[in-house]
Length: 422
Image 1: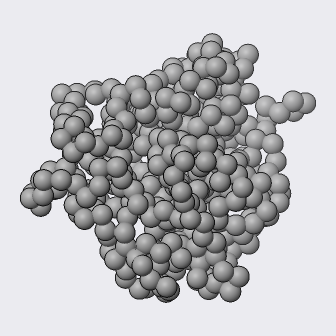
Image 2: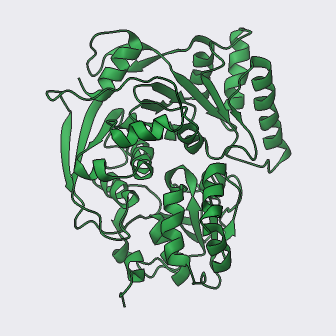
Image 3: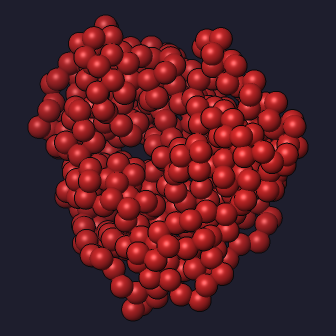
């Protein structure tokens, strides 16, 4: 079996599962945020139960519209808080003590290798970077999990992506996943598991692995996953003392397909409007003028992302008529960026640094686009209307490309900012 099949079999109490088989699985952790949580809570009450199945295995995060930007969002936050109090849910991450749900989940120790985790948010697949089977589900379905602690899942086929080679300077895991989505397509991996492997993945930081797994849903995948190694175990043990079980794919595991990639010659990539799989090398779209640059989100708002952007922005100014919004993914990330002087670099460069939140990525809060405006964003989606006006255009790129473009006022290959470059 593959690692995904093994985790599902374990969660279902079975010795073996195969692709296409439907299992009733035990959930280890369930997560909901301030957009999906209130509806889940409403549905839970309609079920008629008084208590959730296990209040220690539910995590609630306020992140999408934080602080509340309207009376309506304030009401949604209130519903979450009251439910947490009523149910004795300890893990409620409120304004000022959390951040984007997917970053909070991994850095606060709620994700462990071998776990089955469901979240009422499509980018729950991020947690596969730590060797968990993690997938997004709907609000009504998470309500059923709150009630029972179990879920029906169809065992997915697995596409294995084996990556070799070494990244060039200012070429990042974000460029790799954009390249992969461009090749496989937005519907090329529907209900598949994407298993990343190879020496390049083993050399990659946890932050980079999180970026890869975060975006597998953009090609329709059910989950993304990376086998745990020493980096994974160290990262997890620093954040939790709870036990976990390591699963790895068998040498004779069957895959739907195996994709071989080498990153030696990979260039900075960009996903052009209005589809995540409309991917081109940055050099092919260089020169397109931008109005906004966004650095943040559950894809690229971690410390490593802020650091690479700060390398480019240090001692420079953002181009006049361009606004740059920097949104650290969590309170912990913000504090570390503050300690390292990154926040000062961003502010001196002319950027607006916001509190940890989904913010501009979600298009519901802080950083919306007007008709005709162009944004280059380190986030994960560029659909029509995703970041504001349906007449705006969003280009997705790495933090390095976002920072370089903010300085130049137009989409720019970040390698132009390497020392010794013209």
